[in-house]
Image (cartoon, rainbow, N blue to C red; front, side, top):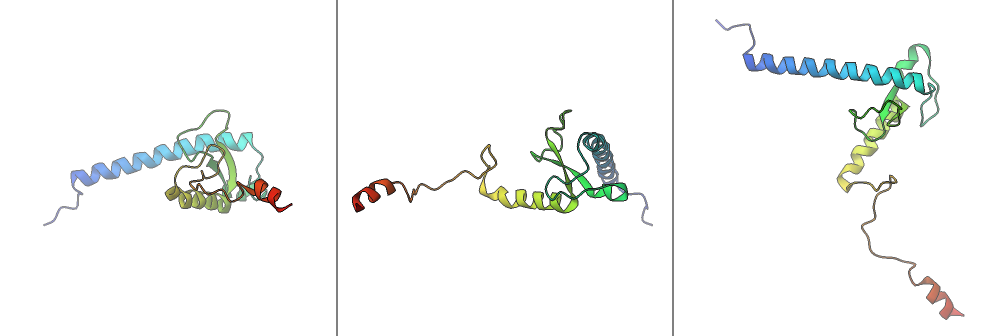
Length: 127
């Protein structure tokens, strides 16, 4: 007769998953509550306003995509609606294979061709 109790390894894995989810939930509650107190209830991208039951559609986005970096001044957060938040993460994931962006948020150029490098000289020769 087969035992109905899961094997010890399976139990251990399930316990780890439950603890991780609880920890994440607690962490999210803390920074979400702080962000909602700091910022107006407006999506920073599309400008939609939220209140009442719809407030749950307003999410906290980590600008540097590090969910563990939660400075008390909220400088790593912005409030985004569900749709803009999904869009932001899609854009981030789509750009990941192309390397790290520069510090100003733009992709570093890997090309060396400068199409207008001698434009001034060419225009002088035309006169």
